[in-house]
Image (tube, rainbow, N blue to C red; front, side):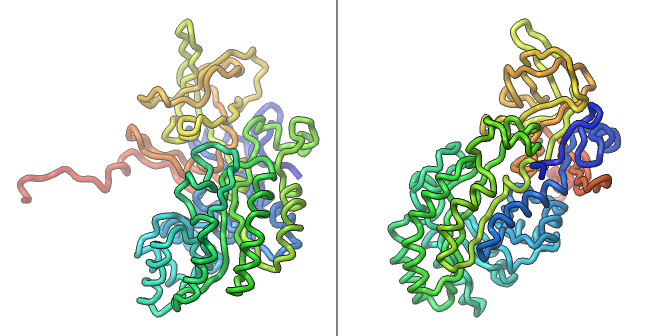
Length: 435
């Protein structure tokens, strides 16, 4: 089974059965393109690998919240991991079941808690004692019992990027491992709480299985104790499964995964082989909350070359996409493979691919050997299906790109390109005469 469905056909980049050039000709640039088949394949591979467990995959909406993406996953039976009322409402609009949703995040408001309770979500992943007390108070005011799972901070270093690690005591997430037993004892006396389970999440973009194993092994004695005392029904082990950013295009081939370069990298099969034997004896429902693994390599960002600029020291490829469209390289120093939409045999030149925004940080890569290109050429930034459009902005009063979801030879405009005039429709100028 391919790991994604982006490949060259007769020297032209395609998403499934659709030509990228044809999509840009119709919808313009920059342009996000997603593969429906890749989303479905990634979800199915992961679910099948966990078939020995009573499990639920709760897709992390923050990775890519487009209604078309959510609808594709909802049809497969996916649950959803949400972090705001807006995300819950998106799931509902996309046809997802809110009773299969968990609600995470450290700053839930009273309004958000009330909405989630009225919608009958599966569980709150609770991040602090004050939040727990707030949830109890809101549930009491509604005459309901709030389903909760404490997010445990297991103090396990996942060895990932500092801005996406979440499982140590240096992070804002969760409650310290040592405090959990006493907290559950306290919770059991709070009449408007339903102790549904327990949760952890140690970080994102993990490409080795060991951090997951270490965290689960540390959690198991605690989970067993709480299960016996409080009749828990689920254990959420969070998300964090990583993807291959380099080489992204080659990693779409099953053959690449048999190469030396791929040896030891995390796959659903390896993940399950190590974790299922640890989790199965619990007899609990196991929740996982992946986002990037499902959506990351299912999307690309297409951009057009506007100028080639040589300074004598640098070769700049100036494109029409910018950091407001894809902030990860600027924010995380993240790597995204960049390939020409038309396969090129041109000599490689050490290049900086940069956008038009008035920030030195508006850079997609530096000193990277890329095939020589010219004005008007199209480039594809791969692995842009997660934490890409969802982190976009209108900085420099730039409109957001369109999003296209490809399904075989068909495609759907799942978000129209934003118009410039729409950017200030909610604004107004002060009118002294109306005071």
